[in-house]
Image (cartoon, rainbow, N blue to C red):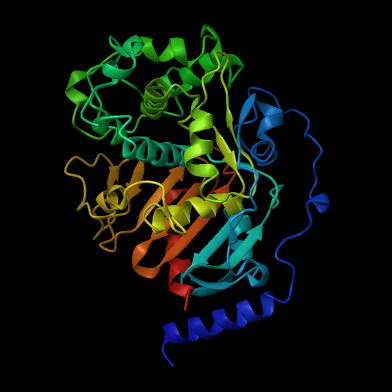
Length: 418
């Protein structure tokens, strides 16, 4: 028997046994008391973020993303899904439950061939509670833009200034929407999470989302005033540089093009139509701007439905939410010619339409967020993997807790699936 066959056999046994137990503990069994010391300076970071990320409407002002009054679209296999499974981890068998604890993972959902094969919760996350998505929000913003574009309400060859005159003199004014979606704009945005004076941290302070010593001297004005003041770095235009503010600019464009609040657009064009079972939410800054770059919070299962929407190229049942070509364009790209990060041997990564191309030669694409949020979509194996986490800091903050280890775990799960 080959090692892959033994792994598959082991997994089938694990799934069969695990399905005999409840998928998750009832919500009432998970501690719900607000922890001491949680405030505007501490909520983003461990250990308090584990509670905060599942109670965002109690931490920051939020606007609901309504899921509609119809019954939710069923997730097939949910009733029999396993709670745990065995994977090969550095040459040794390990249970996913133990790896979740090691990696600060609060929720893990695996969907294979349209059926949920594993669902597991940890920390303070439950099936009914939403979890902060951080920059997975960007991908949902991109899908919303796809829907708006499908209706002809935006033209990707037009500029930001064509839709939002207030941004004409900003770092994004002359950029085409196509370049904005790919973060190839010319803004001077700085995404250094460790630097208190970086644009991304000053935005947090300006929004009122972060307080404390790092925010001294930063006026709380909100994005409608903060974004127009971000300058331009023309030499960047055309090359990928990751910038959260660029997604917020796209959300502003969508509001201007449709005359609707961004959260309502997500509700009408994505959330209701995927058959979500719970309202999602999105944090709102002091000026009423909804934080499209990282403020959405949703249940694990509904994030899985978003993954299925991507896997099925914009189709939900008989309804087409946006053109299949939108996802085909993301999947089919052959690496970035200006990739600014180190790439693993044999991988040709890229960024397109607010999604990360893994560059594995199999068309795998991902939505990623700091502190360990992930949707992995693998068309070749018809698999969706969702991880919602509370890493101690943005890029990990603990031994062997980082994006590299997360990607290793994704590959281990995919390999273990029969």
